Amino acid sequence: MNLHFTEEQEMMRKMVREFAESEIAPFVEQMEKGEFPRPILSKMAELGLMGITIPEEYGGAGMDFVSYIIAIHEISKVSATVGVILSVHTSVGTNPILYFGTEEQKRKYVPKLASGEYLGAFCLTEPSAGSDAKSLKTKAVRQGDYYILNGSKVFITNGGEADTYIVFARTNPDETGSRGISAFIVEKDTPGFIIGKDEKKMGLHGSRTVQISFEDAKVPAENLLGEEGQGFKIAMANLDVGRIGIAAQSLGIAEAALEHATAYAKERIQFGKPIAEQQGVGFKLADMATATEAAKLLVYRAAFLRANGIPCGKEASMAKLFASRAAMENAIEAVQIFGGNGYTEDYPVERLFRDAKICEIYEGTSEIQRLVISKQL
Ligand code: CAA
Image (tube, rainbow, N blue to C red; front, side, top):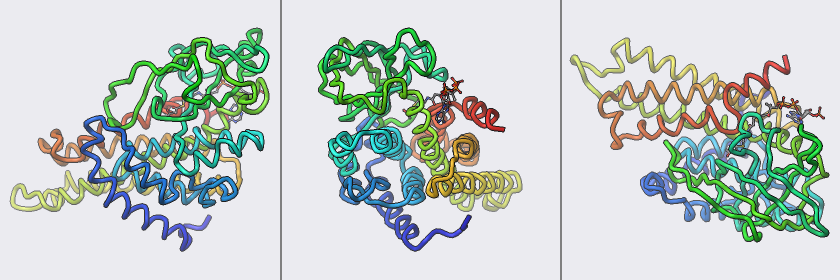
């Protein structure tokens, strides 16, 4: 593994960093008030960021997977909200069509997703099927040229804002396990597709997370993704990749917490010298920096494997498990270093603290990552 980025990847990092600082940072306050960052997504689309890894023939930028991870990492340092919107749109909102779709499906949807005209979402989780994803109950019954979907989904990132949804439903009621599940591309204006409760979350205030119900939703049979019964494998295969995106988002939060805490500790004088020079604070910063570097290596190693077509489900889970813990621990310590200031909305570490927690939960909890890793040992 080469520990240096290519010239192209370095250019990508510089471009995204500048964009995040000049365009995303001024919008953070509005996102914190709950505004979905539409204007930011439009600008990201102009820069080709909504289809970084999509091949040029399908309207994307045709860049490698490492460049995509660089983008999520740099964006999340400034806004984990924008980071997750991009990650979900790309990895589980668009890639399933690219990897499992027919040529017709790819031509119909991927260019619109890659250009940012469409936003993507992923509907796997249900009220009684979270970690145990294969116990999902949403049903899809074939009737002529349509599948009729009934059921409900929860915690759908980008829900209500997205144009296309990758939906998992049971097509074979006799098969209770993973083999009875199929995947569908569902468009937002499908009759019977209903956007429900908009969750009020601890963090990621500018991202939308909704409940969705299907009430005799009529989905054209041609929107079946892959074959009947292949849905669970489609979900799992895309989550393998998606988890590297969430790991990169976590890395961005961990690094931001470290940078803010270091800058503050150098300026804040107590007992006659900067608190960074007090061993209790200096050691905290040392541990935060070490965790951040370790997370970076795991995240970029998983990305490198993925970019080179090497199976990396275990490495993706390790990266997500470790980086999300680093994000949470660094955010906790950053608030501690900021003291009373850290507990106020006047300083960014309070937001990082709230945003970090979800990284240990979505796209598979830390416990599920340990399950995936241990199964492969
Ligand atoms: N790739 C391809 N196929 C896979 C796979 C993978 N990574 N993992 C499992 N499979 C296949 C297996 O080979 C098996 O196939 P066969 O039946 O043909 O043998 C089938 O899937 C079932 O596998 P398991 O028996 O191992 O399934 P399991 O139920 O024991 O465990 C799990 C699977 C890892 C626990 C899985 O359920 C899981 O990942 N759960 C967490 C769900 C999750 O991550 N949800 C996130 C929601 S999306 C989200 O959060 C997005 C967002 O908004 C940010």
